[in-house]
Image 1 (cartoon, one colour):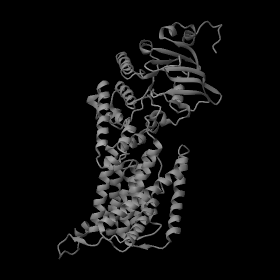
Image 2 (cartoon, chains in turn purple, yellow; image 1 turned 135 degrees about the vertical axis):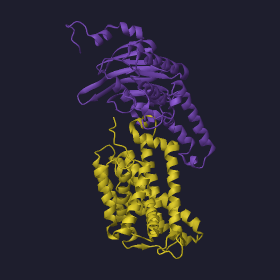
Image 3 (cartoon, chains in turn green, cyan; image 1 turned 90 degrees about the vertical axis):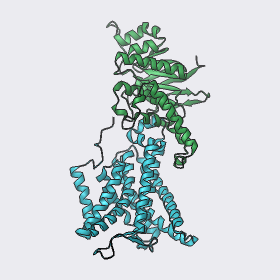
Image 4 (cartoon, chains in turn orange, green; image 1 turned 120 degrees about the vertical axis):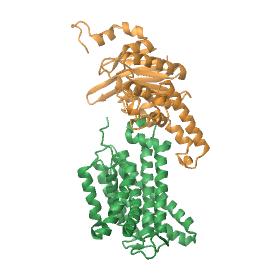
Amino acid sequence: MMTDSLLCVEHLTMRFGGLSAINDLSFHAKKNQITAIIGPNGAGKTTVFNCLTGFYKPNVGKISLTSPSGRIFLLERMEGFRIAKEARLARTFQNIRLFTGMSVLENLMVAQHNLLMRASLYSLAGLFGSSSFRRAEQRALELARYWLNKIGLLDYADQPAGSLPYGSQRRLEIARAMCTDPVLLCLDEPAAGLNPKESYDLNGLLLDIRSEFQIGILLIEHDMSVVMNISDHVVVLDHGARIAEGSPTAVQADPAVIHAYLGTAPEEPTC
Amino acid sequence: MDYFLQQLINGLTLGAIYGLIAIGYTMVYGIIGMINFAHGDIYMLGAFISMIGFLLMGVLGITFLPLALLLVLLIAMVFTALYGWTVERLAYRPLRGSVKLAPLISAIGMSIVLQNFAQVAQGARVKPLPPIIKGSIQLSSANADYPVTLSYLQIVIMLVTIALMLGFSWLITRTSLGRSQRATEQDMTMAALLGIDVDRVVSTTFVIGAALAAVAGLMVTLYYGVIDFYIGFVAGMKAFTAAVLGGIGSLPGAMLGGLLIGLIEAFWSAYFSIEYKDVAAFSILILVLLFRPTGLLGKPEVEKV
């Protein structure tokens, strides 16, 4: 079970004052798989993401991410930007956070910042027009164009990102995360606010990313048409603890999950 | 008309210098939302380092003027940038994330520290430098009632400023460094999530701002020929006014604001009263704050979510 595990969360606990947002949570996400985290509102899903990306430092627990080279990163000990740069974990937000004042293309270029900075010797070489800088810039542009093409925004490359319609902004945010060359892509409610057609297209995009780049995808989602159709593995949270785990169909039939979502007979007190 | 033309030349020269300092204010404000009140003193240090640089050139016997100028420019930029970097590291970074007033007070403290440092290290007396770039072009005909001159020094100042502004705009709009700078300015957290080392970006901002202020310091040393430890205060306040006039946070705004303040000061001194030229410049600050708080090219502040 641990062998091809990409992300391994063990005994994660996050308290805010007296409130335990996450309580002794353990789960793992595998490479080349889409893992969905679901649960009722306030179950602690986004808090898990915030712990993964270094926004919160968990009180207890270990979060390890295995890089393709075999190196293991302990995310709870790393600075925010190093999690993205070295452990290569990318994330999107429930409320989209594009650089709205920058162009669509620039949003994708800025995600390739580290690669470009190294190639350009922190822009010094760029001043003298070195060829390695221009080659790196060219490669970055190609990757950006590849993603623009994939998400159907090639014609909008020079528009300000903030002027795009909502659905396009979502796809752009995913493309931007992919431009950082992640090993694990964490998506916080990517289907929120999308219409059924857009949500269906999103499924296609995510399956595409999984098969083409062989990376792990960790997904928080309320839209069950997304979760049930594309997930390989589902983790169900309630009140900060894991109540079920397994394949989408197994989870759907789990009594604990039905209880958490719908409640059961009144004599059973909810915890 | 000739008199007007002369004031225009003087105003543009002065404005170029203010513009270079104003960029430092506006960049720092854009990226971490604080007014770096020590920036004027960084410029003052730039002037002192330039003067030391010229003396060094004299000692080393480098008399070929363009080479000496270039070397002094480099020395001033490098050392002043180091000061800028250090100030951020010591006085501002530890306070990032605390209340907004804390780095501001720290900046005022840093300003006093730098002034006293220069006063103790270099003495309180005014330091003269003999004119280095001499000569001028006569623009008006010989029998005109008011001779209009454009000195070579003024040409150098304007050319250097234009070159720096172009290079700087290129850096901000075209390079990866500039992109990460703009990204950090918009959303620091998101920039970090894309693997951008935000601390380094902020440091770079201070380094660039200080290097530009050093150039301004060098040019003032050449232009006026006298400097003292206190020049940073007034010049800093004027450049700050320029940044506010142009719209704080906006880079083209800082350049435009600098030019306007320079022109206002020159024309006010020429046509009204030279004693009240600072009053004119600061009245502009008050008027802008009253009637157009976002400045000429600034955008209204949108609360970041």
